[in-house]
Image (cartoon, rainbow, N blue to C red; front, top):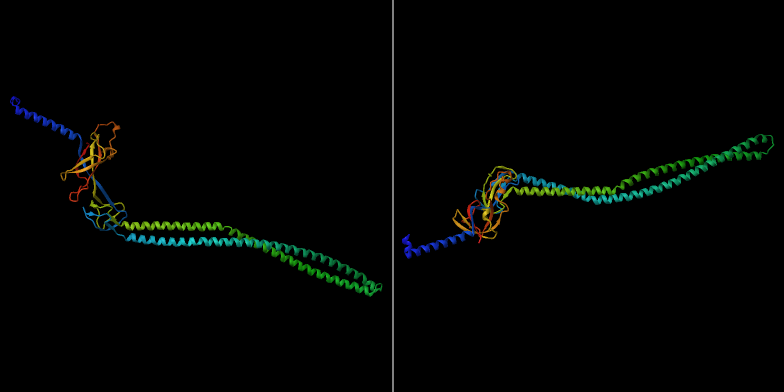
Length: 405
């Protein structure tokens, strides 16, 4: 050591080495002070589970494991015959409901017109019957007056007949004694016969008047009965608004059944379409769990489609590393599989720690508290999509480095 200190050249080399070491330490400190890195990171992406929307027997399976499929490609076909029958039945139900609705709708104006005409006719019939009652009443009054007059003439004729008969009886002994002339007696006999004839005529007129009164009473009774009938018809015709309302309600109900039949037909069409299970996105088939002839149920998982075109990195940084980390900062992703670095940009930080999203999150209020540095998921997106010959698959391990300066 003394030799080195005594030797100017050695001393210069030592000083130079110390200076270089100090500069390297300062540079390394500055370099790593502006970088936050973690190997608790992996590639993440969209994994779309494929499930059956209808049940049935699998007819064909057109995919195999790890196959690339395009969006809209048919993956699995379910036997469609049951759903074709259901579609035909739904179409027939719609046709029947449509016919019923057309009939009910056409009945509304018919019912409106018919009930309106019935109401007008019934009102006119009531007016005519009222007029008929009035005429029959006047006719009855007139017949009763004629009967009363005929009864009076009968009494008068009977009184005259009795008087002339008595006069004739008184003249019979007198004419026999020649105390009165034969002419007087003949006049009395003629008067008696005339009075008897008048009585018979009055009785005949009375009988005719009574028959007329009875006929008038019958006509009045018939008019009253007709009035009751037409009034009943009028009350029935007055229900026309209610009948129209009922007819309209039936038409509305038929229209609702048409809407229900259309919805059922639409659902039957959907179910028939669902017999073809299609890929919603472009990607690779994984976890295939279906074979031809297999009976599947609605919602049963069949496979998954992994899209490799849109992937990102989910890095779990310690909370002590994120003081200077902000969205928009530059990042570098080192992929262990390829040993290469990929440029990236920090997209966002999770709103909660990863422990909070676990199945059994820790509860520090129970008393079993041990302070543990938490990790917060950070989403990092690649600046350029991965190439087809070097794809990045979800779950691959990477090292994420965020450049905070």
